[in-house]
Image 1: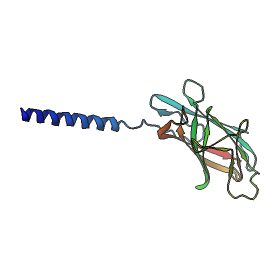
Image 2: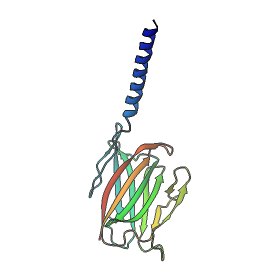
Image 3: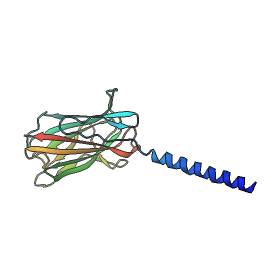
Image 4: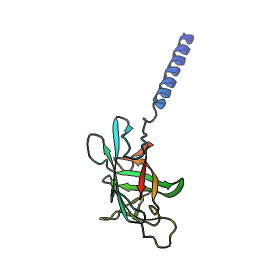
Length: 188
C-alpha cells in the first residue's frame, strides 16, 4: 500500500511539474514586425494584429524644417486607434544615435512636432511636453503636440526609426514583450 501511494505521489508530481513547464513554455506570443520604407506590416499580439499608422506633414521632410509626425497603432480590421499606448522611439542616422524617448497618449495617437530650427545652441534634441508619472513617458499638453526642438532631421539622408510599443489598452497594461517596429524616414 505504501509503495502504491509513493507511485501516485511521484506520478502526480511529474504531472504537476510538467504542466507548469508547459504553461511557462507558452511564453509571450510572437510580437515582432520589421520593415524598411513603407509602414511595417501588422505585428501579432496573441490573436490580435497591431498595425503601425504613421503620417508626416509635410509628407516629404526637408532638412532643418519643421515636421509633424502622427503615430498611432490600429487593431487590424477595426480601423480604430488602440487606446493608452506607450512606446519608446529611437532615431539614428548612419549608426549615430540622435534621439531616444518614451511617449504616451491615452487616445492612442501621439503627435510629435520636430522643430528643425528650435532648441537654440543645444547640440541635443530637447523634448517639450509633460512627463506622465504613471508611464514615465512624455505626453502632450492639452491641444498641443509633443515638441522636439533641436537637431533631429537636420541633414539629408535616411534616418532609422525604431519603435517599441510597451503598453496598450490601459496605462498599467505593460506588454510582456514589446512590439518592435523598424522603418526608415528619408529627409531631403
